[in-house]
Length: 382
Image (cartoon, rainbow, N blue to C red):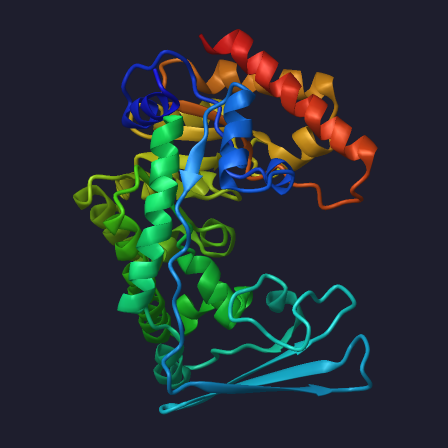
């Protein structure tokens, strides 16, 4: 089978010639590659499966929106950075306290994990902020879609040449709300202000659906929908009531376009097994027995007959920071628990990325651990 055939048959629950091994994310390998072609080719040269990511469609603010930023302080750490967006419906303001590792200079981006712990005033705090926010969340323009389709066609041509699947991603609804409001608000406003929470999710989701439509217009094989913060900060009850209806609509859109839907969730996922199954997803990426706390046997028992599981080992603690013996044992455990009966794709969750010191020793360790995982998988996958 080609890599594409193996991946798609596994996600559909059909027989394949082997259990796939496919990195959804591998920052360490990617940074050593000059372009996407080399990155994908390197994965195939390793003997694993690969998926080509379609480029993200470009979106812009409404042309009427303007912004300004000013810094308060002495030009060092703990200064305050203030940003205001001016829109026809009013202003939106946000403030962060700067730290020595702030990567965005004198700007506060709309989407960044760095904003959440440093925020002193989030951008969206009450229902009156939704009208101005709507001017910031505008879908791709017709001209940008035309330009995007040219780049997407190039990616699809590359995937066809290599015999690999394509994916569109990531559409981070829960994460976007956390960037806008903060994680505490995301976790609680469904209880304190349900109408506000419902309206906010509807506004953000409608904007993201416009982007999803662009992705689906290129006919990807898989749409990956990432909700890293959904299971982390919502209760299962609030997830089912507020988030699930939007995710279910995305599943329906994806299936109507002839693509497969992969949900991504990594942390505190086990209490959400029932709501996730009710979404009608085809695959679930994020199975991590260490940081995610997934019970592999229970996960396989609950999902193995209807949802393809993607993951099995931890990308950082095992591949990046572990040793060969640990990697071999983790791979053997994942294969024994999740591969029987099919519907399993082995992968480090959720990325292979070295956030510590980049030294020759660290890079050598990552390469050796990656090869140990691949060799063990190859021994057990047929």
